[in-house]
Length: 302
Image 1 (cartoon, rainbow, N blue to C red):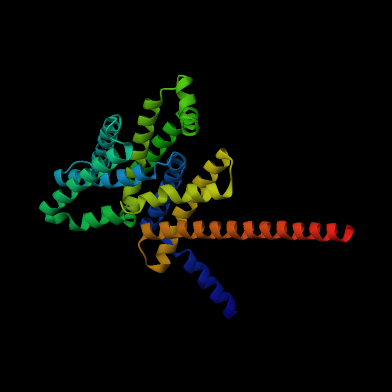
Image 2: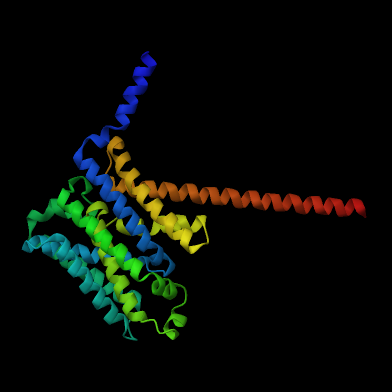
């Protein structure tokens, strides 16, 4: 009887996070953001654009700070700032004397510096500064959740409409150009979708953790399969599940929710990588054993 009561108590403790509205909103937001960052991240890693994802997070931070300071809508201000940053990056990258990486570095660090400069003038922003850097997922309101869900839906629609040309460009840009696909327009729209993804993830993960959420789930999926459709699906599932689990686990370990999401994703990556190394060693050992047996058989026949 006592054992049954202890089991019931543990079960009820496991359900405790679901009793609070702010945790429910946080888990829903983390699931949505985890899935969409992974979806966009698939194209980010395949096109080797991890740097631009990291840079846009810092750039949009500047827009978030300015929006807060002037009393402008956070999501709208950050989105406009992200779109403007993408426009500047694309314009600078078209110059032969300026490489794409250099353009990203200049624009995004300048925007980040603007945010820091504004903070140094507006002393009252200290608490919100930490929230922007590290996320404030437990402070998400119903309105924030609706906006986040709307942005995720918009990004999903854009990805659906651009699916074929985006996949084409990702794997063979030269051939895509020869087939008449407007590469520059597709890349510009994808960059805007990436900026919108960063804005959606800002309150959940913060500036410092967005790049990890963009990269880790697709890399894990890449370790599991060589098929692009399966890679995409696995990445989205991993992103959504780890987003949910990260917030859920953070309730019990009393650690920042955004950091816990990334730590859960990192743990999944480590386990996947370790399993792959173990499997490859097993395969190598099996091949060596087969080779030795074949050699022994040849020697016996001789």
